[in-house]
Image (tube, rainbow, N blue to C red):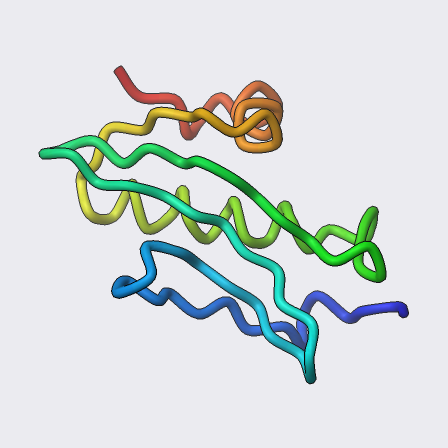
Length: 94
């Protein structure tokens, strides 16, 4: 299933501590926890139909933009987020 990233909306669902993209019965998610001034990203999950098309990157970018605009320090327990941070050092915080 090919996706058009420009047509996908990322929703922040704070009551579930996650960002998600939903299309029909498919859901991609980025989960997190908050502790004080630190947001910890836990897991990025993308349906196999969407893998390799930038969906995970769109979720992570949205989550990191939220963290930055909210003044959170970023911590990653997710290998996908960690790899994204290595490729985008502008998101790295102390």
